Image (cartoon, rainbow, N blue to C red; front, side):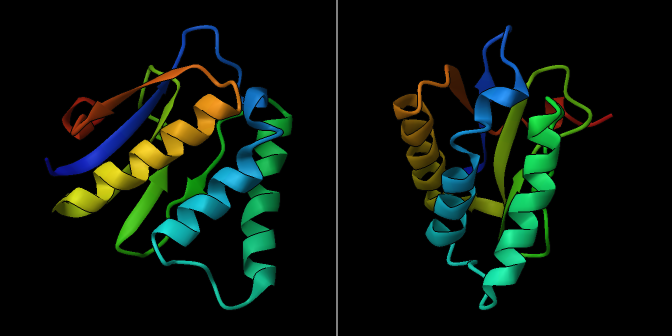
Length: 124
């Protein structure tokens, strides 16, 4: 199976603060799995600070929506509380990374479901 996007959709009563204890490891896992870890650790720390400021205020974080082959996006247009992993083309790597992040969140006790290729539903 190949996918262009893998969506982690949180349960209805989910609060962004629920990611407070696991977001740092979630982001680092994403960066490692996609081979996008910046050479300078200060850049990683900056991304973490920016995202954690939002999470601590129970706001949707930014994720890692930078130029790169794979992105972690927390969409503003979605009515659902979710984030997705996205590539410019269908690939098995999206499946592997999304499933790994899903397993990580389950171990952290964050309830969610996984959906595939739902970007058309997010467009305005």
